[in-house]
Length: 189
Ligand SMILES: CC(C)(COP(=O)(O)OP(=O)(O)OC[C@H]1O[C@@H](n2cnc3c(N)ncnc32)[C@H](O)[C@@H]1OP(=O)(O)O)[C@@H](O)C(=O)NCCC(=O)NCCS
Image 1 (cartoon, helix red, strand yellow):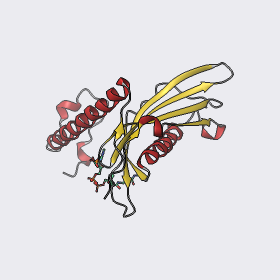
Image 2 (image 1 turned 90 degrees about the vertical axis):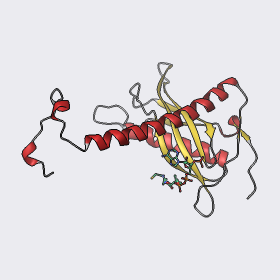
Image 3 (image 1 turned 120 degrees about the vertical axis):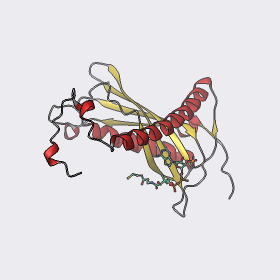
Image 4 (image 1 turned 90 degrees about the horizontal axis):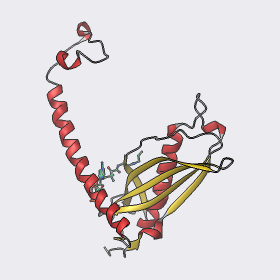
């Protein structure tokens, strides 16, 4: 199989702007987190598939912290760029900014990283083009993505370890100061 030629970060940079309409709001009048997650997924797909020149699937989403509420009437801008490529995977960094056009204010609401995998005609992961890094910032983001990948691997194995230890007992001592009620009569172990 031929290796696709390298592409720059700017080649696939993608921005989506969406008006926050009333049907996107929750009972508190703010925009549902799920609306923003859906837009994050959409812009990540657009950006990743442009770089890969292939269909891509979402594998993992990191750092979804909602820093500020988004209001009905705001324009939400989602700016996406490929920050890292592996063999078939790509990490897309997304900045979410909410703009109030009447007040002329902008606020940063999210900074997320979505891992996508490119799939070929056979529906199997397929090689993506290398990423051409053209600035110190692009190098920093690429290396940061590698670090995040290592830390996630470490985190997953630690959580598995902790989980298997926790399975062994009811750990009444650990729960003593927590806001839960241990109803041992219902336990079927
Ligand atoms: C993602 C998927 C293609 C991986 O398939 P697989 O047969 O396990 O393939 P591989 O193990 O070769 O992994 C392929 C790539 O995915 C990456 N990957 C797999 N799981 C991952 C995870 N949880 N987080 C980050 N990357 C992951 C691998 O590191 C590898 O990257 P590389 O090619 O750059 O080295 C497969 O699990 C899948 O199709 N998942 C469903 C995706 C989907 O439908 N998303 C929409 C949600 S409804």
